Figure (cartoon, rainbow, N blue to C red):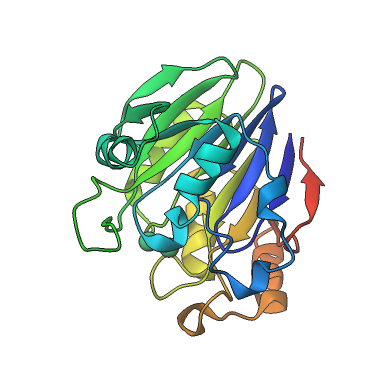
Length: 227
Ligand code: NI
Ligand code: MN
């Protein structure tokens, strides 16, 4: 699996030769100014919730890529009202077999509204799996006991968790989450983009190492290969 970071909580993962793009937020992110958004391709765009730092470029990229957007019922309906027809609505607890593998939507403890304040459904996380491999993107969430259920469903190869604190889990809660999901390879996202979520990257990596876990913090634009 290949992971490419586009800043904040936006990344793509190549899974069985399909490019899955998560939480498109690039053009408003000053730190991602070197990312050429017009060069981004995707087969699927997967959106965890309606906050602008996860959805800002969704309409543009859905049009540009002709990808199918997978998200909550409410976000899919909103996209359809904006002329995006290739959508697949899901909700927490449900799974569906796509051509690249199965997505299971998980509970996320957060909020979800559009920029105008209207309701965007419940926030979601996602487990993507096939018979050999799987990963988990928690979306924006608090540490929750529900995460303990995930290892009953699958043995994760890696997980993408927010580590910036204030709006989501911080580093220590993300370490506890990694224990709950029995996963030792974590990619940290949702940090250092705004003043509220500034962390010390080195300290974060050290804190994971102390628990014999690896925290990966790729640079914006960097691609890493994961087993
Ligand atoms: Ni959010
Ligand atoms: Mn967010």
